[in-house]
Image 1 (cartoon, rainbow, N blue to C red):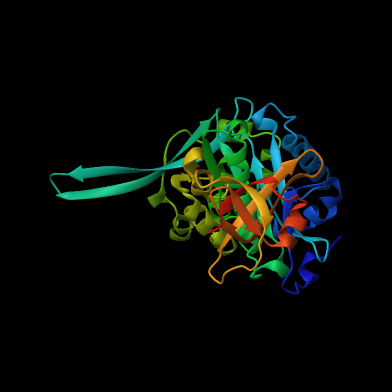
Image 2: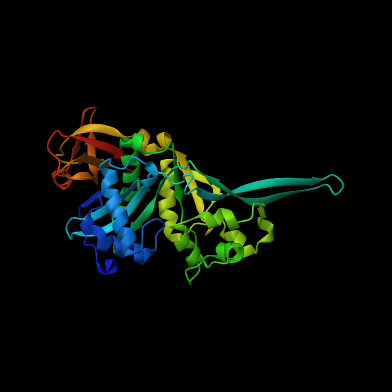
Length: 353
């Protein structure tokens, strides 16, 4: 197994963000196991299926959005190792596998006699059988966190660039499930206090089962609302809380135009953020330009994500300094080489935040 935490970056590297390939399997598995990220599989067979599905999805060979998965990798071209990964799930929520969530609502109660008013927050289990496109699986290997190239930013933005380029493949709404704080034992306060009591399952048992069949959620979770004032204070505080590791990803989502939906995951209480697909900033700012070499970049030059796609090399992108005109985008020669692009080839361009 590749030890991604022991690969020390040297600085000045060029990173290629590209679609996953079969030979990425071991390193993707190492990322998933080491960081236990939402969406990215941690078992070999599941990862093999995800990569195989991703390859077909990028080729446009998966017509059913609910079966389409897109896995992106950030490759350190100097070391030939993966620095991180991210994903798009074409559709999360169908009649066979609904998208379950708990809506956070507020009820007001007032007594004229006592002249007192109370606002009670409660949770209501809901589901969608015609769900949104989900973005997730954003992971940066420990050795590359804080790298000057801001790999996590490129891995986040590349999903939106790809969605903007292929709008017909994705749903009108986007959603992102955010990792919540976990206990030192790898469990979750909300599940231990509520989910375990209504299902009889441990957090890990429920998590594993939900990857295959979520019927037990609708069958066993009470239909009655759960008033949060009945929960212990520490459990209430954990609802919609964000894991410290996920805070940078949340900030990027907000800058893209996502907002908290007042929805939480029924397993771990983690928040759901969402947005209208066509209204997010990267999609609205997506441009097409002809690429050419950049002679000498100015000190104040803007950084962009520049991408291209073809049958021979698939989809790939680089984060680089660039200068735009109404017809062209000038980027450094090493970026053109990393993209495997030719002079005056049309590429897709979106500003990086």
